[in-house]
Length: 230
Picture 1 (tube, one colour):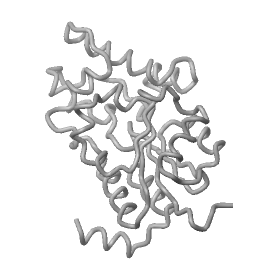
Picture 2 (cartoon, one colour):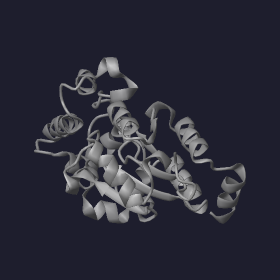
Picture 3 (cartoon, helix red, strand yellow):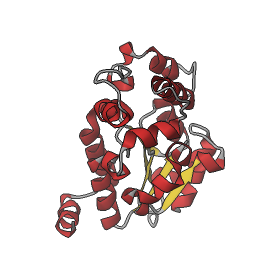
């Protein structure tokens, strides 16, 4: 049973959950890096049947890191260059990385913090993909009580040790942590580790954050108070 003195906490994946996916930003990416409109056709969860590489990733034939390494290399070749994922993110992103943070994510984090809850990130490749410089410019990361990143720990979700590290960094019991991730295998791993896990359907971001707030017990009064302070 959860301890009465251990309040709920929120633990978020970064890619897709906090950040708007590259799939949703194809037009923006094409403009930023000088590609003709409609050049980028892979859409991952928005069109699984049309993205064989994505279905291979979901089936476990390749890792998520492999998927993005391949896509980054493909885009780089279109520019006659060798790109990794960090290069793709920087070149595609434009001058302000905050423009690619989901507004629902920022609102929920602020509401949780206003309610006195601890909030953290548990990512497999935050600094690997985004780099330290970009991380330091992201306003939402400055609100976090903890960031556990497998770039440094070497422990990738769904390894049960990853969730232990994430909960310990928040100072919360696993059963009191609401965990959110867009990859079902990571959600299943979190549930096995005892967390209250939510699968984040990227095609329904607003509804997903409404469910997260419900599980955290954020009341309309809390939300109204936070809105008045913004």
